[in-house]
Structures are given as structure tokens and as C-alpha cells.
Image (cartoon, rainbow, N blue to C red; front, side):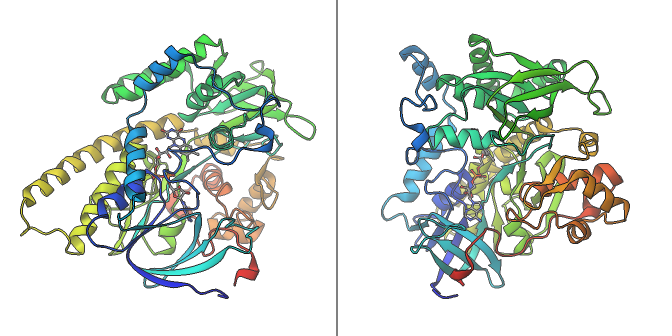
Length: 501
Ligand SMILES: Cc1cc2nc3c(=O)[nH]c(=O)nc-3n(C[C@H](O)[C@H](O)[C@H](O)COP(=O)(O)OP(=O)(O)OC[C@H]3O[C@@H](n4cnc5c(N)ncnc54)[C@H](O)[C@@H]3O)c2cc1C
């Protein structure tokens, strides 16, 4: 390294979403040296997205700028029905960043890799990333205890035309609106199987956007059948009803049981075809419906970010109810490696409340491990009571997570039926046909397929195509995920300029 900046700390928390904030908040105030690292310039992760610098396209008058359409009454209703995790998350962020909290916040900074003895490589600076400016530097931090709170990312079912400009993930459309104050387009279709779809439609509608259509992969009957399972999660039902009311008010057409067959356009998306699928996931003839749009936001659920725990040697397990491969933890959030913890969506998709609860559990376990709290201290019974309550709440959150992952699930057969000319690995331009040929030649594990085709070896390092290829392999070979194995992870997990070494 040309700029070695070595440091040590008691606890390093990687990720400042709700999970990381909650762990750091619990650890604060006990005289420990805590470092909280996040690649975003704001705290709060995916849940507490905040406005960033105004984008040029977002300047008023271009037709793409985000303006509120809410009147005073609707704003009041919104305030009353606000997800309680928003104020809870905001106060965690405030507490952690308050002077004297003992939490050293390093952001924006990307963790590139984990090495033996809990050494962490970090690229820090205002422009951390492949186009790093002169202010960017590499740091090495050695921590006594590590907490992975790296969250999750979206996953997709590829379709013809999904690489066209104007086709984006649901999360990207959210970031455009919430952070850059720009609408994804003048006329947007929203599609997939994800709880983010109605949330995005709602945000677009209250910000003068136009939602041309919302196409949900699940049938209305199937969704109604899921409602009783949400009985324990009333606040989520209320949230869903609020989104549905807004869609009705704006007369947004909703297609139930429709998947994207194709995105069309010359140079950028100009239309999208939806169709129904049969029980074998084939598109049913005569059910196609075309919509003219200038943007398409799509998502099929989430996958935990496990690259760093994998590098640290932590055991990961595959469970569709967790969203796929996830870091395995005990009830106190410790991984299979002593002194390394994982919290939030790194351990399975489950929502912001799960991240908060798990962060607090990990924080308490670490405080005990470091001797900051112990059974001989006064009011130890209160500590035990709090923990007991958190264990119970963590179970409830898990049951919600199972429901979310069920709502997001796409039949495995759909991955086997992706048309041959569809690009699967976008970085290396590898098509479904190339993958099928390699599988026929016997390259049926992750690592052999990678060597045979270069899939997953591009700039994103399989962040996008990894979960897709896992499912394609399962669909084509009938092999269990455990046999295919989790994607291999090596440092650096993020792009960086060679000159920084
Ligand atoms: C795209 C997307 C949009 C979402 N939108 C919503 C929404 O609108 N409403 C809702 O209720 N829920 C939403 N969720 C779900 C929400 O993220 C969870 O409910 C919850 O907030 C997860 O908290 P977390 O702390 O576990 O993870 P996150 O909030 O994902 O936080 C993880 C943090 O780790 C950081 N990180 C990861 N890897 C590195 C690295 N190598 N170096 C440095 N930092 C790193 C990330 O930048 C991020 O800030 C969304 C999820 C995703 C993936």
C-alpha cells in the first residue's frame, strides 16, 4: 500500500444501516473504541435514504424533478401512519454521531476485504470507488471484534431487453428519487415480485411521477391467500393498504400474475410486454400486453450481502426463507468464528425492525464478551430481561422475514426458461445460451462455470449475476444449492484504481 494508515480498535462495525447503527449505539458509552464504516455519505443504509446533492437533471423545470403532490391533510395522514422505524432509526443515527458517543464514523469508505487477525482493508475518501480522486486513501484497521452489518441487495429474473438504458432496479429508482431528487422517467412501469413495488409506486405518485402500470408476478388469489399470515404484522397490512389506496386514487392499472416477457426499444427502453405464465413458467400465448413507457423499474426480492463474512471464514447456509445464502449466527448473533458477529439482512432478509433487534443483541453479547457488563453487576436481572425480550422479538421478525421472502419468490423453472439470447452476466456479456452449453459440457458448479465462461468475473464480481446463476444451475441440473456452493469471495470486493496500491 502506498498510503498505509494503520489503526486498531475494540470493535469495527461494517455497515451503518439500521443493524450497524443499533449495534454501535448499544456499544457506545462503555469506554470502548468503536469504528463504524459505511460506503454511503449518510447513516441509515437503505432504510433512511436522504437527499444528496441536487442532480443536474433534477433542476426544476426539466419535467423530471421531484416535487411533492401531497396536500396538508394527506401529509398529516402520512405522518400518523409513518413507519415507527423511521423515527427510531433517525434517533439511532443521532445518538451514534453525537459528540462523545465513542463511535468513530468512517464514511464514505468501502471495505475491500477481510484478512487474518480481523484486519480490514478500507478505501476511504470523498470519491471512494473506481474513479477515486486524490483525497482517497487505503487504510488498514485491526479490530478485536468484528460486526458485519452489510445488508442486502436486490435480485432479478432476467428478460429480453433488461440491459436497455431506462431499465433499472426498484432500489435504483428509489435512490434517484430520494437521494438525487429525480424521477426515473416521465412514464414508468413497475414490475416483478417485491414488496418494494407498491412502496416505489407510492413514492412516485406523491412526487408528481406517472406510474403507467404495476405488474405483479403473483396472482391476486395467491396474494389474498397470504393475508392471514400477515395478521401478526398489522402495521405492514396498514402500510400495504395505504399504498393500495394511492394506486386506486391515481387509477394505476395493476396486472396480477404477469411477468415481463420483453423490454423493447432502440438505444433505450420505449415499451414493455407483459404476459401471464403457466404452472411450468412458460408464457401463455394470447396473454401479452404492451405498454409504452420510457422507464422500467424491476426487482424480484433481495439477497443477503455475504461476501465479507465469507472472506472472514464464517459459515453461510442456504435457506429460501432467508433470501438464499446468509451468514449463520447463534441467538446472540455470533457467527461460526469467535469474535465475529453478523446482524441485520446479512443474516437473512427480514426488514428494518429485525436489523434493529439483532444489532442490539450483538451489542449486548459483545459488551459481555469484553467484560463491560457481567452477572455480578447491579441490576443484571434487567439485562437478562431485556435480552429475553429481544430474543422473542427477533423470532417475530424472522416470521415476518419468511413471509417477505415468500412474496418475493419466483418459481425456479422460470430461471430455466430464460430465452437463449438473454444476457445473464452483464459485465462479461455472457448469454443464457453460453451458460446452457457449459452446463451440458459438465460445468455445473459455480467455480467451474466461472472458469469455463468468465461469468461473474467482471466489474460487479457476481453481485448481480451470482444469485441468478445459482438459480439457473439449480433449474437446469436439479442440483441442491449446497452442492453448487456459495459464490467465492476474494478481496477486493469493490473496484479500486491500481494506483492506490
Ligand atoms: C435497494 C433496497 C431498497 C430498500 N428500500 C426499503 C424501503 O423503502 N423501505 C423499507 O422498509 N425497507 C427497504 N429495504 C429493506 C431495508 O434495507 C431493510 O429493511 C433494513 O433497512 C436493512 O438494514 P440493514 O442494516 O440490515 O442493512 P442496510 O440498510 O442495507 O445497510 C447496510 C449498509 O452496509 C453498507 N455496506 C455494505 N457493504 C459495504 C462495504 N463493503 N463497505 C462499506 N459499507 C458497506 C451499505 O452501504 C449499507 O449502508 C430496502 C432494501 C434494499 C436492498
